Length: 152
Image (tube, rainbow, N blue to C red; front, side, top):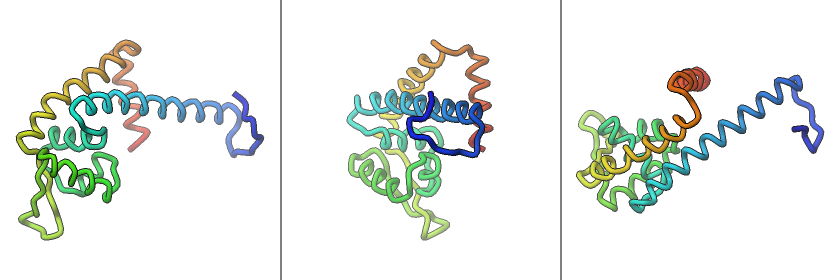
């Protein structure tokens, strides 16, 4: 697709086309997976960001607020507000670290673990089903390896 507005880039036409195609398809894939996770989160009255926090805590166990922010790709200030909402709902607890006054650790409560056990398999199942309809297991592994290489 040609640009409606003419502009110069440092890329050749072929590199520009591939880069635009890759960028847009990555964004579409992210949007699609986010929608699937949002639908599952919504079924238990949560937003995707809240479910993301529960997923990370369910997968890795108690973590610091800093690591939680890093693992969820949520800014530190939004991580704090999301954790506060989950704390008010009874899904997580925050505790000061015994080794550092500055560090706050977050852990799932029994209710949070129940939500994780209910939703995590559904989110993963829906994501896997979508990909397995379109890709072989080998293609999924190759894509995972390529994306890992891209982000590292």
